[in-house]
Image 1 (cartoon, helix red, strand yellow):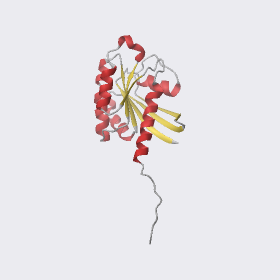
Image 2 (cartoon, helix red, strand yellow; image 1 turned 90 degrees about the vertical axis):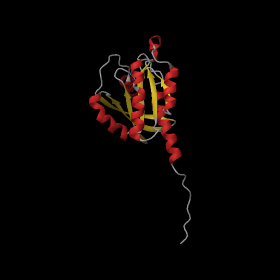
Image 3 (cartoon, rainbow, N blue to C red; image 1 turned 30 degrees about the vertical axis):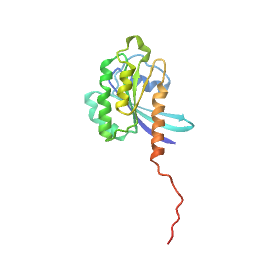
Image 4 (cartoon, helix red, strand yellow; image 1 turned 180 degrees about the vertical axis):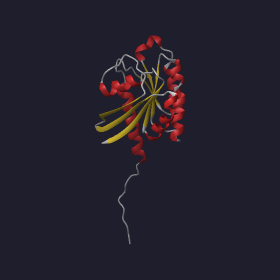
Length: 182
């Protein structure tokens, strides 16, 4: 069974905790309670293969900034969340993506940009095109979700697992039988 570390990053109020709790506990939390930091584990079966997800729901305030760098270094994948009804939360996404790719020293980091709260379509402040363009610039996926209606929540996380598996399959050298002559 594989085990993966996933960090959920985004501005306060974007729905990071709601997404994580919806995935791990199948429930929606309506009230906003700023997270200091929460850790969740969930065993899932994706494409007939079991995987243990270790998910860190971060606090992205300045006082926790040094810890965030440590989490980024030690993690496999990243869910960068903004709320579709908050332009300000979207504008932070680029900063988080740059921070992740800089710390990982790679432009090919498994991450997904998540536009959360798509149940609030009438209050939309960020177009899908803007988010897709941003995701393309960081060579990552984009998906819209709603923790409230449980729309695309699994897809956001499971897509990362599939991406990591694909990358691992590409990186593994093909073992060939060897013949050694002495």
